[in-house]
Image (cartoon, rainbow, N blue to C red; front, side, top):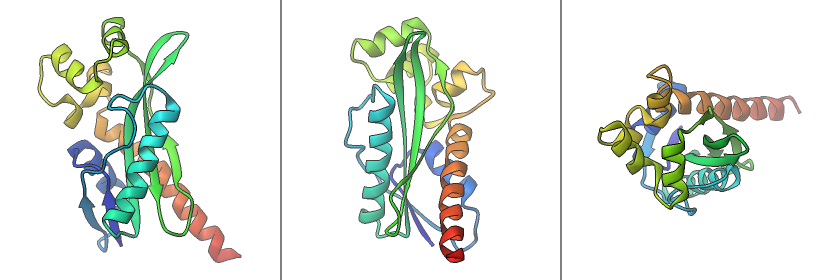
Length: 174
């Protein structure tokens, strides 16, 4: 089975590999654009970015499964909340989607995002680290290391693969 990941981000690649542990799985990671803003600012936009990455990964990599994982933010009455979505695309089904962990961002981070900055560079500056998005992610910083970006996306991947396997099982029964 050829699984094409629509990102070169190590945290996202690890999440996909954590769930697809079959020996016959071949993983390819491609730098696939999300087709949405650099900083998605709603669940809808973040979902669309994940779907775009999954569909285009499937097509570009000529795979059996395309995976798109996308991080964004959602404005709420409580403030700006981190959101994360994934999509799994195949040629036989409409894309499966699943969402992940959410945490309220500190006001100083939220204000910078609202002013047009992107979360990745803001987190590097805030945490005084480089490439936070490729390691623990904002979720890792704000959960004091209890949940890493790879773990968060692994949870999403479990939901995506579970939905896909369920659909396959139901098809075989009918």
